[in-house]
Structures are given as C-alpha cells and as structure tokens.
Picture 1 (cartoon, helix red, strand yellow):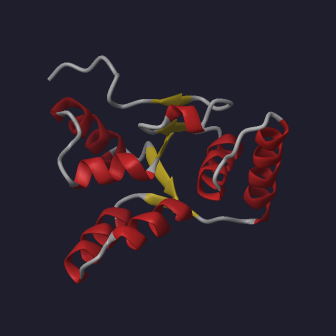
Picture 2 (cartoon, rainbow, N blue to C red):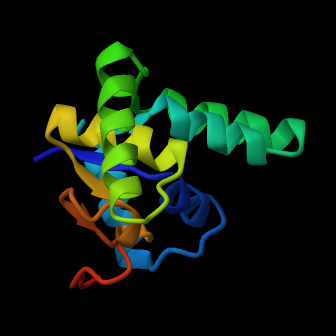
Length: 133
C-alpha cells in the first residue's frame, strides 16, 4: 500500500503536533518508500514557509520523499472531481482536487486530517489510527 501525504500532516509533523506514534509511523513509511506527496503539497508548504529557515526545512523534508508532478491526466481528473462536487452543490478547492486526483490515478491512500475533503477516495486520518508506542 502506498500513501500520499497531505499538507496538514506535514505541517503538524514539522510543528510537532502529531501524536508520537503517528510521527513514528510517518517516518517509517517515508523511509520505506511507501509515502509520496503531490507537487501541490510542496507548493502549499513553501507558501507557508515565511523564513529562509522554514523554507530550508520544507525543502529538506520534500527532498526525502517522492513528489508527483501535476500532469494533464491529473489536471483532467481534478477537473472531473470538482465538477462532480459542483453538481452536488459542494465546493472542492483546486488544491484538494489535484491532491485527490493524484491519489485516485496512482491508487494511493490519502493521509490527511481533512478526510471530508476526500470522500470519494480512500483517505485515512492519522490522528485516529490505533497506534501504540
């Protein structure tokens, strides 16, 4: 099983807000090559990096994990996801649509604290996993 890590999980990892067992699990799946992320997550992390030190931390973190670029297939799938949500009277952000489309096309599980943003996909909330330290 492969996992696509969402922005909020990286932020909570970097700010040490993840439970200890969740942080260890995240480190294990990154080291084992079972984790990846999307270029849009990298963009979001850099946007939030307000200092050179924060930017360096983000760059080092992302260098340790496969980052999937946004291509035409992902863009088209993201558009389909947003249109499907719109038909239901809901709004899906472009970033979440791109992350979701990446996970869907690659058959990855999204690891996010915002599972409601990915209802049509397999998504897990790392804060509610039954870990033991």
